[in-house]
Length: 370
Image (cartoon, rainbow, N blue to C red):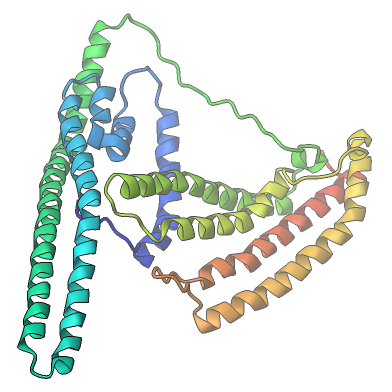
């Protein structure tokens, strides 16, 4: 199989973090507006094509027997790659033996002192090892060439099917509509179940000033929440690349823990707005609404000390990384300074949300809150 990308381009990583949430949010909102009638969806069909098209899953989703055509090609790739793994050891072993024979010949020439027999023996040994290596390499090249042809045929089939998929979905939907009993499709409204603490009385309090701050953190929180979906696709890609196509990557693990670190920093303010942070609430839950607000005002002193310290120290930390253009020391070499820049940004957002909460607590205590 042709090697998949071992090193991910930096521009693709950073642009993916920006564009994927925008595209995913648009597709999700568009899908929710459509009435769910139970018939095949083009978006889901393309998702199956992207993730498991090599097994024909997108065709099985449309109840089409054409999906069975893809399976022999996929099994052929798996079999050829298994053969490549088996013969690769022989190629490495014979190559090492050939190098050892070359070294022995180089050492025998000055030491032989005109001993033609010793030189001829070293040359003969080298020739034998070269033939062994050439034979082993020929077998490896044969299987690699074969898997490339099979993979190329499978890729061509997937590209053709990508163009045919809209028509196939339309035909399947028309067939199911013709055979289904008449019914009135109703749009599905998803139920939202909030978890976490949820004891903060300021969640239901609004003012023009606090609503602006809350809206900023809600938008940022919803944006970076889509990054968790990226991890599903990326780790799926790594598993398939490593165990099916013999092409492990060096960027998946590093890119994902950097992404989740940035998500952790940027989602802190949104979690604070939704009251999802852990709180020791054995006594707090028994307070009245006004009592909870008073307790939050008193404890806000420690909150602002912590957030202010985090903002100051992380800003200096990020500034140093920006000035030196800090990047990873792995083969990937991705930039670290954008990651560290999310630390003061997240602290600033958390500080703004703390101010919003303090204002709303004061509104509750002074009975100005609706």
